[in-house]
Image 1 (spheres, rainbow, N blue to C red):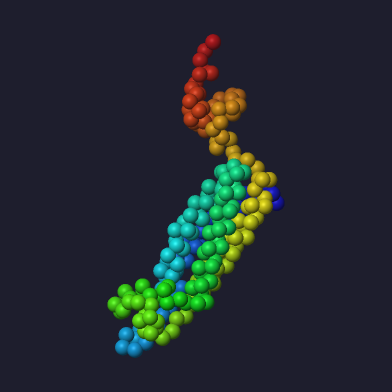
Image 2 (image 1 turned 90 degrees about the horizontal axis):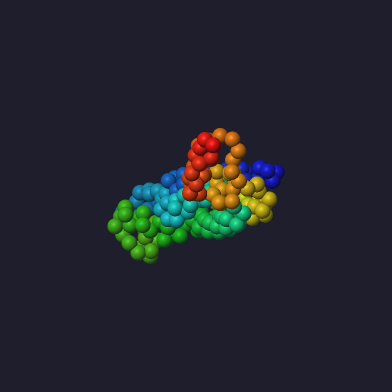
Length: 199
């Protein structure tokens, strides 16, 4: 299980970030206006939760980076993922169950020219949520769970591969150098062809 912990964590975190980005483009709320302006409006995830898309992209980047970092950064990234998941889950829950006027105000104002929470609230007859807020809440709960898993198992993960080690004390490779070995030598300020000179 521990041998697969890194792969499992990276895949789940990246998947959560991808679904979060996709969710930001989907319709979260249907708004029915009353009176002379009676018609239906839609509110996307990005409009309902402005931080949804940027934080989802951050989760994507965090998941990819988690595949190569050392032990200390695993804990840092795990804590960040847990914080993002908790904040996003809370915001999505508020939108899904409370439908606050502040979430729909901009969409209504753009459509009608009427501004102010009180005026918008009087104009709105009904607000209904689609399945996307609930889906997004589930995604962020999963992210919180996998972040806790990272924090619990991070110390037992295998270290990253040789191509991510740039310390000067790395042992020299015996035999012919491949492209990765040559690049590692160059990045340490060494001449990869120095040992090839004829004696």
